[in-house]
Length: 288
Image 1 (cartoon, helix red, strand yellow):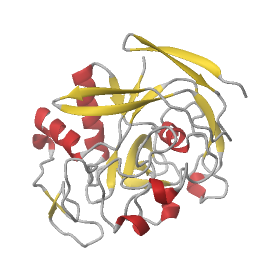
Image 2 (image 1 turned 90 degrees about the vertical axis):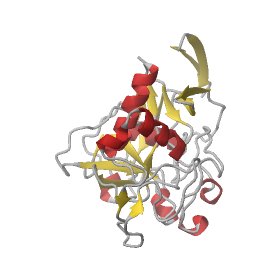
Image 3 (image 1 turned 30 degrees about the vertical axis):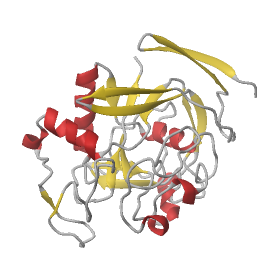
Image 4 (image 1 turned 120 degrees about the vertical axis):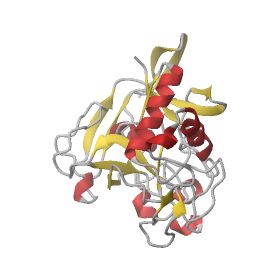
């Protein structure tokens, strides 16, 4: 298929994509536009994802990932080049006075694996630097972070929808991984079962780091037991009849085997849990 040009306005600038709109089987990569913002002395790097169509889920996976279904995202959106880091989250905690809402670096959090009771929330089982991904965050923590970022910038920052996340992870591939998983991901066989600083492995073909592994990433959708009735336009599935108060995390983590890192694997998690020491997130931004 020959490329088709797509253009849109972003912050007063015209960006033109030469892309194929249907990416179901293509594995060709191209350089995507990137941008950065600085808020509260902390830099955020973003990659602009073009419109496209892909097959979400897998008929060969468990019931939660079935049926495989076509999704068309007819808009562009930005997504974080990396998972949100400790430094970025600390800037938010300080600027938004989030300590009053239940988060402090010294708050004691139990470990759901039973191996590190009463560790500080920012240090899940081990010490972390400012370039490590923030972990032990709830869905509500992640949404509060995005709300603060939106207020600071005037843009619409949010969590990516589940479809947007999988589309950005797959990068046009139809397999379980968007490249060599050992080169791209921290998982149990490569990580020594500790979280690593972001962007130390190879990015996926669209320039996004740690989409496979390191920490699970919250998405905007609520949990559903399977894909029957899922939106086909990239939007979030926000009602939650199957598992009330359960959200979705994607991508797998440093603690998991590689099969849990496949592009279509989904995991349900209680929205308010901070005891999961391998849950983090990355940001997305819509263009109005």
